[in-house]
Image (tube, rainbow, N blue to C red; front, side, top):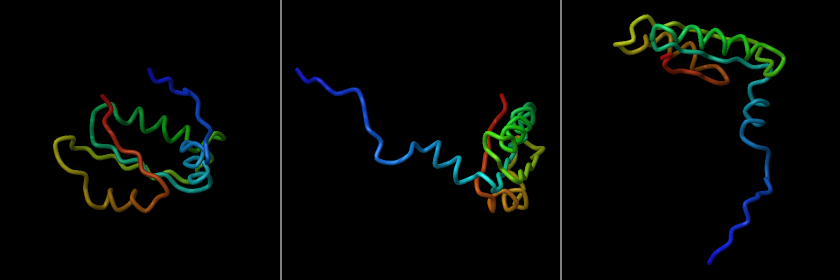
Length: 91
């Protein structure tokens, strides 16, 4: 029988802490895929990102209006230059 130690000591900060430090004071790109309710989630992400918990200085929020087709190249280019990108569906 093997018994494993269920605890761990981190050699570096957890990923979420590093991500937070990397984006604080920076910019965040949000790219909608055009799903009908995604804007609710995107607006909430923007509100949280610019608040005191994350301290993002700028949010670039691009709304794609055709869920059946690819996002326009200019929208992708706008958000890809930011410190972080969020994209997804809203269903």
